[in-house]
Length: 299
Image (cartoon, rainbow, N blue to C red):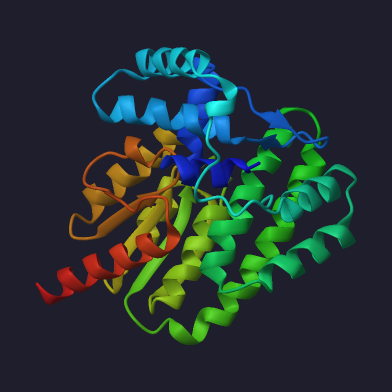
């Protein structure tokens, strides 16, 4: 059995795509643990791979889903081969379950212990990408399903933010390169991904000013007045944040056309030109930003 992250990796799609296909087309119906977390079997992976292959060939997603379901139903269950990349062990759900369990009971000590354990597993970027971000996605599902209260979700999110603050300060020694400012538009309060990117940017040598959430347009214009600033980085985490962030990007560009403006987040594709989209990987995004700033400096 696989978590949503591991299943998506085996199929070759993002977790967001897997969730969308499951929700919109009913292509699979994963099992759930007693705590409510999705678990995907080899048959689910096989169906998703069939759908992906058809989509890659030019089929619409809806038709590909229907065909993948038809192929699955026509194939006897004993002919479904085990995933050749599986090592036969169940992927760990430890952080996800512990984080959500602690959030649901407002267990501050349990949250701290879970985060202590996971941040000891490896480097910052690997821990965030492979463990913390997937766990936070499932925490969001638990909140949406009513298994975790708003207070519990805030408790867990703030615990992660405190860990990011420690990592940010620890990375200060690396940040002596080009100066960038990072923050969100007015009304945008989901900042964990942006703060994690700020840590990665510092670790890649950039001098970062992390401004935080919910900044009005006029404040952004005051920030970018500094001629030493090399770039401004924003995030569009949800559809509700598109309009306000687009307004900041447009205003900043009109105010300082020479300034590099970059954007990340789940809805970054909606950012207006000339914003640079950094993608969904904090390491690749930091490298992209560093390379763009270097190219502009050289020019």
